[in-house]
Amino acid sequence: MEVMQQIFSVASLFWVAYLFTQGMPTQLLEPTNFPKVLYMGIAGNLLPYLLYLWGIQRVQAQRAVIIATIEPVIAAVLAWVWFGQTLTAMQIIGGGLILVAITSLQLTKSKAQN
Image 1 (cartoon, helix red, strand yellow):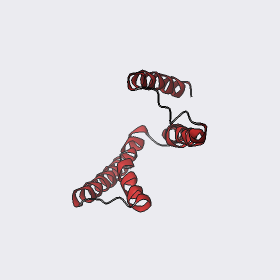
Image 2 (cartoon, one colour):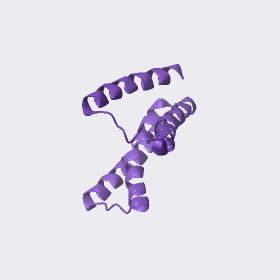
Image 3 (cartoon, one colour):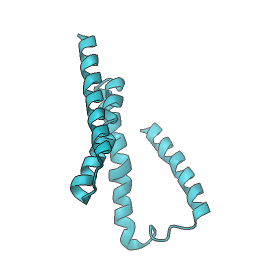
Image 4 (cartoon, one colour):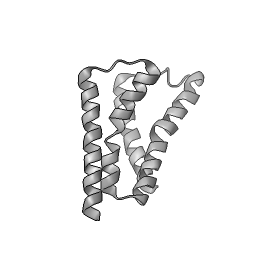
């Protein structure tokens, strides 16, 4: 947990430095937006990191990294379902190739361990 605190602290310093050059983000500081910003900080950053670290304790790190590569595919599918985003044929093919690669690597690792 201490490592995560250090990671978020360093990332926060970089963001503050970047935002300093861009001007003050006044919309983020409005009281009506505070719950949304808090939600994004917890659900969009803290929770995924905690789940990832929790998962690595239960499976091998190599497997966790392979499975983590599915994130863009899931993000694209959720954007399509929830937000009506359109996917090009190339994006669908790329997502399919990622799924094939993940499955292949997982099966190869399973056979090698037996």
